[in-house]
Image 1 (tube, helix red, strand yellow):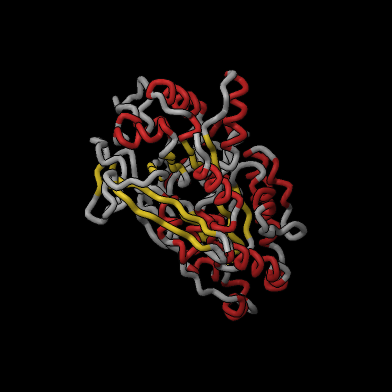
Image 2 (image 1 turned 120 degrees about the vertical axis):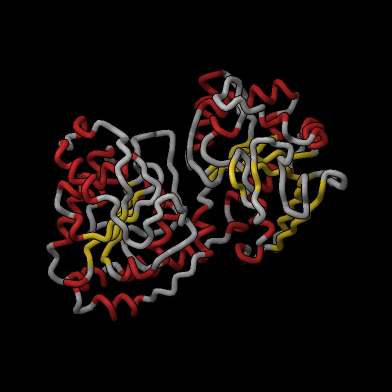
Length: 422
């Protein structure tokens, strides 16, 4: 049995809080961030809640304050949005101080000596920005920290590749530690969804006309979600779906993308469209409504990011929800999303859906997603179609729920970095 132990140091160990000297972060009575720069770190909670994620591993979690910090420890800093907001880089528009000036001086001195590993936790997000790499290396020079005393955790699965590219282009030794993984695919294990295949059969078999072809749930409004909604409206596909979307925000000149003013005006007239909750400012990442999946045949998942950006690949909890509900899916996300999911052990639905959209540009991906929906609407026996997805759906939920962070490559990488001396 492996022993996976990390000592964690906090400014306030009773509340597991770091960066308390930050004047720009407001913490509520529930210890969650109300506003500002530094929410609680995700990675600490893997160790704190090890019983949830550990399979055959023995996990140790030491919690310490600044005064009783051990010889080797991690100091974890939670972040959110993008580095332009929380880093405090020179010339930032908020006038924020450099984040390393807010780290306790004892921790900074321990980082210089190799005693402390400073972890910057960006697991909730997948925003790649070369600015981050310049900031980290510049701050290491400014404050005398060896880059190897930093660990950057990212939800962007291409983060390390992009860091290595940047380092090569700028002739920099890539010695900041970088680890990426799908944090949300572990968080989704906490969701409660008691849908079984028999529930789909009971509700859908023989009742095909009362079931919508697809669901497409959009909460936070983004350009690619707005674009898909307008395209679905133009294709007269909304009547076949359970679609949620807030009012248009006017992300782009849609005429440039072939969408006429008439479609935009029709969209303004029918929005917002609500499936379950009309408060589009509410983050429902950790909520699931099983009824939506029982009342539709397939999910169209609009991921957090979907632009044609070769430097990012981010997978959120959104793809996990149809997996938990035993439903097939299409994903409007970064190119290569389906390929990455298959590489993680999940199954997709080639042969039943034209999945060649996975490596097309955004407009072509959208075209093909809508064409797949058109073809599904005319399938006469949709229950027979769904039955062909059964094994893959059951497999996906089994894989998702059996994921063991402490038996993952990412955990081994973190432990290797933690154990290394300067």
